[in-house]
Image 1 (cartoon, helix red, strand yellow):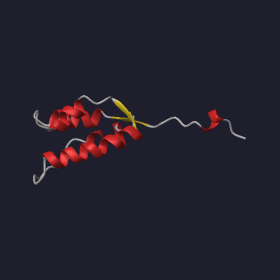
Image 2 (cartoon, one colour):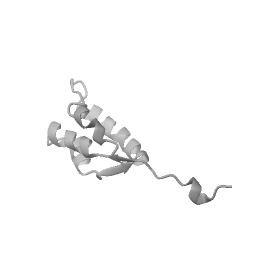
Image 3 (tube, rainbow, N blue to C red):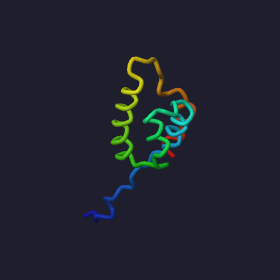
Length: 84
């Protein structure tokens, strides 16, 4: 039989550094999304990240509706840092 301790799993953490860098370097100062992202914690659990991601995407779509913008402009070079 397994104990409660045996069944505990360490939550996976996600670094927000690449996302914060993107916001700081690519989004305009007036952007609400930029203000939210640059003040975010450095590390989030997957659950926290996914919960916040939904809001971030909605804000991004609202701020850039009808504009041709790639949200991945600086993410590719930092993709390896996401899971640190």
